[in-house]
Image 1 (cartoon, rainbow, N blue to C red):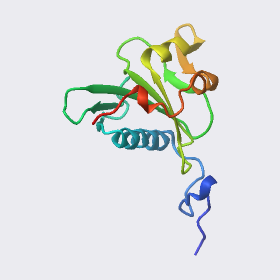
Image 2: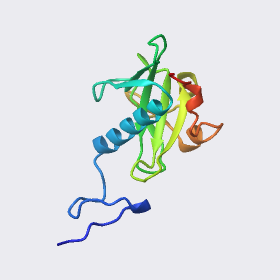
Image 3: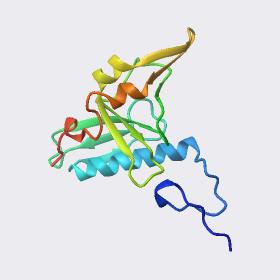
Image 4: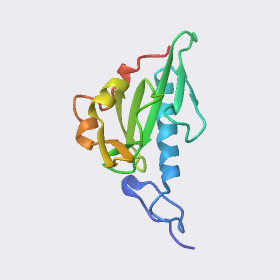
Length: 154
């Protein structure tokens, strides 16, 4: 019997599983981690259909009177956070960059929509742009674990 390989922070993986996770799997880990953290703050959370543009999570308070919309960008390591090909159209009230999702202690960076738009960089071809947040754009100004920006759902 083959022994399971170990990932950083001693997270075991199956013996025959590749060490690189598919992008969709990384996204799922980040999505459900953010749902977990929001639940810890008293929110009822509902992930939207995968690959829905702009909004990944709808959260509502225990009394049902307040809602929040969240877009999640999940990363397996310290990288820029890709926002997509357009910043037009619906954008969530909050963007959470969830980094190091393969470890026992993922990091979360909470930004408002305005903070995200102000810090987004544009690149790519003129006819096919790409928008992203550089690491220094979401690491700075006290965004790490700032769940208080979203507030308490209870």
